[in-house]
Image 1 (cartoon, one colour):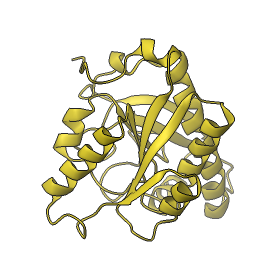
Image 2 (tube, helix red, strand yellow):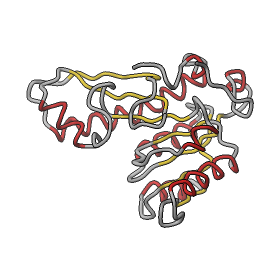
Image 3 (cartoon, helix red, strand yellow):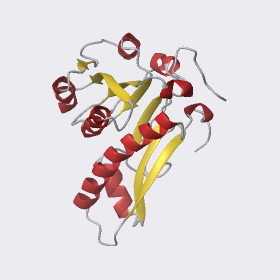
Length: 223
């Protein structure tokens, strides 16, 4: 199934204008910063239009403010129900004419209205090689600990389309890194952070150049 919307950008738009990005982040916003820097340097022909966080004290909001990007706190503290929060996020993205929604360390599920408004236009990154070590409860250090405990020889980062389930949408791209037999948790965390930041920029650049076509990927296809 190919999901399309006439309100969303098409591949032909990549060469004619910047991609307008809306970013959701919950904590430090290191991936966000990598994307902001790549936009500023011209490495990717894009602009971050709005940053939304469910955490009012997240450094991601401060990063956005420092770059003169609108920073908005939206959570169950600002909206009393999940549906209201979903509608508020969707409205904010539309207000800023966002083309592509980026989940850069965002710890909450995306609601139905936002998913409907941005079919095949919401991307998330996960610090493992999906379909391994993902899903409910598998995030952050828990993922890395599980990878090391299993004695894996490699791990990596997956960028995937977002649907109604955690870490379930179809894979857009993956990057792999080898693991040493004596790999430490601290070293793995630091290595993957830098890999993930660069991988976000690389993936957006591939979208910009048409190397990756989101409309050839089905949200509900099997992994």
